[in-house]
Structures are given as structure tokens and as C-alpha cells.
Length: 289
Image 1 (cartoon, rainbow, N blue to C red):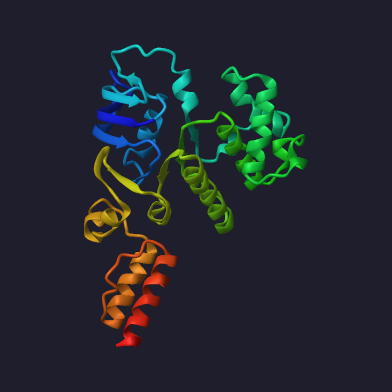
Image 2: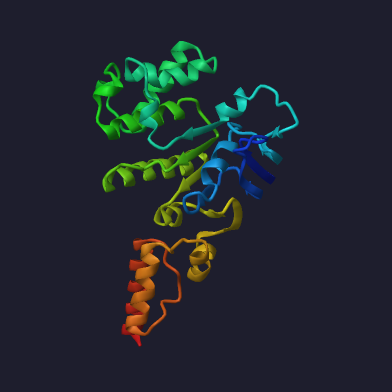
């Protein structure tokens, strides 16, 4: 299911003294099955874009197409429930939205709210809780008796139990330790690959965008100023600096290393693993000379 934003603008408080324009003529095409990152500094419009991706907000100008659904300000949309079932959002600190008395009931709530029978909702909940790495022993516990990391996994399982085609991730690792961040990001990447789910990552982390995304859009002052592959986006550090962004730390390290040894590695490395492979190849080539 493709998502297209065409000339999308948005004004908060439209028609009031507090009116503020947050988006300006944004064009963005997110293709089905892709992993799209949306990055930008604070106040760049990332959060406003996010809320358009499943019609939580309607554009004040332009249109958003989500699958077959067209969202426009002047056009009264039909029932948006199917759209919101297909596009699941994992908000920042999703554990704050937990409310049921047991973990199992909390994960079942979403599917049942969309009309899924109780037995099927329970089966989905059990499957998703296993998928996110939680043991059966937590099913009848209160979610508020779990650790912070476990609570976040319960919230994620609740989104997955609705079987969305698209998952929007709003800074999904905020507040987690390094191991927890890696585990959560690897979980979503595995889902993307194994189930062909469209992933949309809204993040401040250049490292996560470089490692996982196959397309990156840069928001700056309410506009989508760049959209391309990670290598295209991160190959020009001066351009990124103009948008108050930096290249990932591993690229900074690579540039410093190349300057120190006086040799270009001939390839932009987006992850530590890539840099190790390229260095190993370069060392072997030089030894063979």
C-alpha cells in the first residue's frame, strides 16, 4: 500500500490568532514494502507529517493518498477505520498508552476494537507477544508491573496485533538503553524483511536512518527538502549542515581515518560492519601489491 503526499500544507489553529503554518507544499511518495526514514531537526515538521500518515490530521492544502483513500480538507472522507487499521503508529513512549488490567487484554484491545472476534484477537495477542520476545508468564500480569522495556514491547505487540500493512515509528527507542534500542530496531527490521511491511521511521538518529532505511526524507522548516538513498543523503555533509544535521558518526570516523592514512576507501560506509569489511578488503589489496 503506497502513501503519497501531494503539495501538502498544514496550519495549526487555522482561522484563529494563533494560526501557525507547519508544512509547506510537501511532496513525498512512500512505496509499499519500503523502509522510509524521515529525519530533521526539532520543529522541522516531522511530527506533523507523522500525523498525516493515517489521517489523524487532514491537510489544509493538498492531498494525502493512503492506499485507495484520498484525504483532503474540503472532501469529507469515508470511514477512516480501515485506513487506521492498515497504518499502525508506534508513538514515542508507547507504554504510556497501556491501560488494561492484564497484558493479554491490552494487546487484544486493538483488534477487538476493529471488530475481530475475541478468540482470534487472543490468538493474535499471544502470537505477537511471542514475536516481540515476551514469555507467556507475563500474559496475566498487569502491564504496570513490568519493566519499562517490557512495557514497550507490550505496546508494540498491541500495534502488530492489528495486522497493519504500514508501521510508523515515532522515535521508537527513546529512553531505552543501548541494548534495548538495538533489540527494538532489529525487531522492526526483521518484520520489514520477513513480512514485507512498510516501515516509516521518524527519528533524530542519523545512525538508525543510515543502518535500516532504504530511502531518507529530510524535513527542514516545514518543507521536504531532500529525498534519496542513505548514500545519496549522507554523501554531502555540507548540505546536511545547512539543514542543521550531521552525517552518522561512523561516516565522520571514516573521513577522519581517510585523512589520517592519506587514502580514500572508495566507498561510503553506513555501518560499522561495512567499514570493517571495506578496511579488510583494502588491507588485503595492499598486501597483495
